[in-house]
Image (tube, rainbow, N blue to C red; front, top):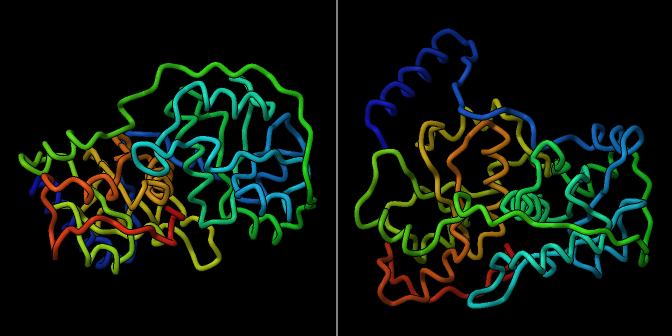
Length: 306
């Protein structure tokens, strides 16, 4: 990234420490538009016509879900070829949304019980296929936060009237292919960073050269709720990810990375991309460079269920 930008951010941080004041960070996009609290979600459900989506796996959904919610699990929006958890094609996404009563005009609230990663992945998928960002929100903290807010829950299956959903052309600006990542590794840009959001243990076994490591769990508090945009706007620049840069992020299969994507997008960052093939694709290719120690092919991770 640009050395001048880093120096300015360091000086800004030092000034904040000296004055004890918070400074406004300039970001290119709107702030606080993508993530809402459980209290805000319950108010919207009461006052507006919304579709609530539970992004848990089907068995967990049947055990317990917000009353009136529909279920769109990870498998409904991903494909397992050539690598696990990759973005499904438009027809599969159209079916998954339409069969659950979601049209292009629907306001959608999404939650999960998995550190917000599956809710974020559905949100990102809908973003890729053109759903209006003003009409979809992730509920911070998911199922637990809704419990704390006094929501009503049900169990079992559900019925919903199907509608038509028409996906827009896939927005390639939100997706990074292996070739783009490789080009960046071989010839680094001044205004682009690669972000690895996996655990330190995973990273110790191999990482894309030049990538910055920020574990995705650093976006959330101990109770599972997202930190506010003001925190993200300070935390990421302190770790060399600034709003003026483009960011390509990945994890094992880019489910966790979607959670980091929405945390940054909610904080006003733009120029964000998911490397959808992720570490499992990168590490499986003997021709791609890997940093310490061996870059051996990735094994399944309990973190994202790959």
